[in-house]
Length: 437
Image (cartoon, rainbow, N blue to C red; front, side, top):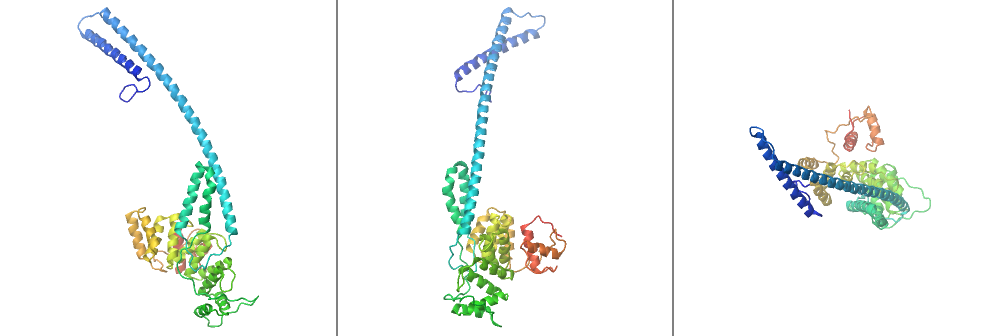
């Protein structure tokens, strides 16, 4: 029966309508008889019920009883039909759930196979990239395209597993050959390769030799330039270490291309405070070139370079925070670093900053804009003390803890140095739930 009290329309609607009309007629007659009975009973003195009235009342009650019995029987029949339909629907849904689980298991197996093939391809890849410079940059568009392609392949594989193989090729290529956005120029190198004869010992840089003099000699093709550069690097000159890393990475100046050596010299320069090397080490760690991949440590080195004013690291750090790679996903921090890079003239960072505006509250954006405007490369905020981070109980233990996690580079001496303050502040930004003392 509908909300207005009428029977539903559809198949058999005419029969239902005529039955409803007869029911209303019977009810109307019953109301009339009952009304007459009430008047008789309300009158003074006994008023016997006329035989014709009693007979009409009996007939009406019998007709109403039969009508109600028929409606009850029909309602029971419809209830049985509805129960049967619900049972069929439940069986169908159970069958669909089983099929969905089977497709998901098949997708998981295919993804495991794809990851295995990707690892094999990465290990077998040996084609050198042309003339890499000291600055190596993550390209956001390629990373986003690869991620979207993988997600799209996963969704399609759930419904159309046979389509997965032809979808995997594109994201694999995007992940393996991540294009680099050009930025700072490479340091000067030789105009022509410098020959290296046999096991000729590496010369030590002459006393008083400088990186500027060695760089000029290297550019001029001086055969003593490479040994002198190596001597400076071994003596701890971070510029020489960075330049030597670039030569190993590009296979220049008579050196065979060696990504392991390039990564080692880049790390030494980064640990010595060379901000460009910090950025490059972040890329080595992100891409897994010359060693294992560690995005968490890469984020640490990007932050150190970003704090020292390397715009590409500021942009990359924004990418990592936006995607939640190596750090917890934090759109406010992503916006902040995009804004800092944009203030330094990076137009792509400005576009990324604008993209995030709609996802933040106006008050949040205003505070982050003020923070970005006040950013000074290498400046330690006075409001970021060198906190003792549990389970450490002293500053020395905190230094050791942060060093193990890749945030701190320096002596374990218990001194609240600017380096320790920056390291503790960076760690606490990445781990906001960490208690401090």
